[in-house]
Length: 412
Image (cartoon, rainbow, N blue to C red; front, side, top):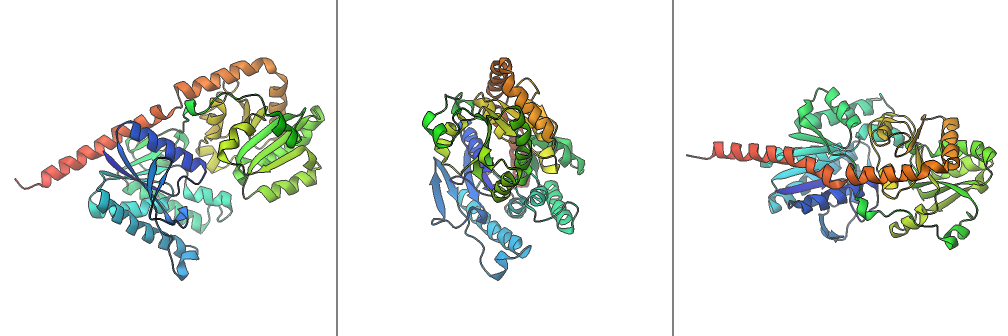
């Protein structure tokens, strides 16, 4: 089986998107499937048309050029035209059995055009809806003209695809609600390679000293600072936590669009000296920073994006036997059994967040069971062999239909 994956971006860029992709590709290869990988112009300028990264070979697509490339709408159209040309070029070269387009819809529409032209089945994997991500980024508002047009484009792609994959039950329910047959939609759940994550180690005393965290009880977040992550709620809850325990500190590891606003918020709340911003750190050093944290916080705000989409971070925390609290948005509820493998609190409620963190820090007797149950969950349920196995049925069905169709057309 030869599968051409069409991707928004990939490693060596670091994001939840690229890490999920790399895990899927490696597990598909472990099953004996041939995988090929093509990134969109959003990967950015590449010195080579093809590139080897961590044992995976990627075809790159040059950015679109011309005056329209940087304009709203026209820029997206130029990107899709450029990607369509590149998909067809690569497909004619490698002759795949399937085209597997991953979010966003800007990848799906070019893949569908090429697939129809070359007679190759196309599957579309939705990790989040483009229109909902745009709301969080502030480029549109829910219900706006742009939002409705983008939603209609997503629905069109879903209907045209031969099969649809998605990452969680929340997104699957939304897709089916658009009038799509339930049997056409398969969940490939987010997962982790438990063996790639080891239980946390004692904190590095030198790193702890350098960050001013000696003697502190550390509540931390590691990742990109997007508005939907709810880090503003965490800072709002910090004065409540400090009133209970002056040794609490917040450690924010990473960066992103909200960093300046968060720094300003900490100043306004009078807690800037209780919040440590590390900036982005090399991926190979992340484990050392995880080890500094007593309780991880995932305070996502309630909105369509977070209610529908499951994140990777809580699974990574479970794999490392880390304690964490998470808001009770739909995406978290699919992963967290409250009080069993993590602690949930009412979304958008700073008092509930403070109570959850303070309660967990104080109740050390609960820690061993939470850690043990989280690790067992990723080892036995949310692992990549389990998730990737679910591709096989739809893939085989499409290949059988394609073979049968070709046979039926063959001259007798």
